[in-house]
Length: 163
Image 1 (spheres, rainbow, N blue to C red):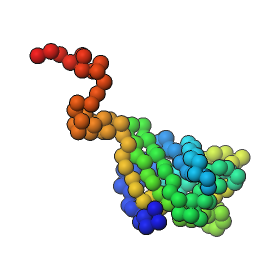
Image 2 (cartoon, rainbow, N blue to C red; image 1 turned 135 degrees about the vertical axis):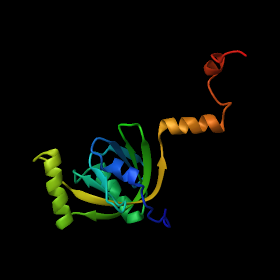
Image 3 (cartoon, one colour; image 1 turned 30 degrees about the horizontal axis):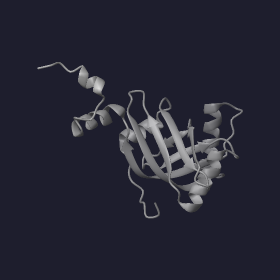
């Protein structure tokens, strides 16, 4: 990942990341390589494709792992799925952690508005996408059936009509 360059996200992926109704997960690795995945309620993308993740808890495993990822340029993975079943996985590299300043203050106010007055905001993480791939089941299934027509469960073959 050391030489990975930031890529542009499509308008479709950006819109899905910015849709509060979409399901989103963020997967990170600990310093010992242990994977950690969480549902992420606060991921969005700028028009240029930079991803922003709001971490609400200072001492969370995710916050610690993102710190390691920032220091050592480790990749993270974000999966987003819309109500229509479209699904994407984005591999990214954390590039900045905001803990103060005007942008942080704007995000802090927005987090309290979105999650309630008891919500806190630890960090606004900026993540540069370096790879994206579609993970929609129906599309993968169709591609598999086209590319490998003989692979399948025997019960499906048993139900085929005889000539």
